[in-house]
Image (cartoon, rainbow, N blue to C red; front, side, top):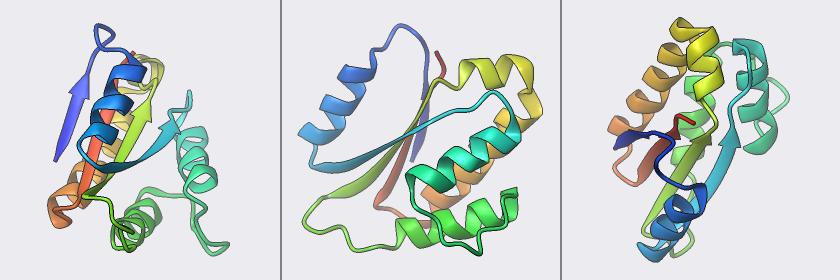
Length: 118
């Protein structure tokens, strides 16, 4: 499941709501460019050294991330925060990354994504 929320929703409310539902929450900030955004995913989610820093590699590593044991959580919830700047400056990149996130969330029922477009 993926949802895109605008600036009317607060970061704290999204994270608190996910945790209240028993989700393990990971927050990845959006970068200003494609390269910066992909690098932030790699850093925050601790992708392996072989990570190719492109959309295909992002999809592969996110699938691996989604398949990790939940450790008692009901779901793994990825919050992609601050995506408005990327969307405004690089709409195609925003849509490409959102598409990867949507693909992974559809393939893994316990992987939930919220994009904060603020």
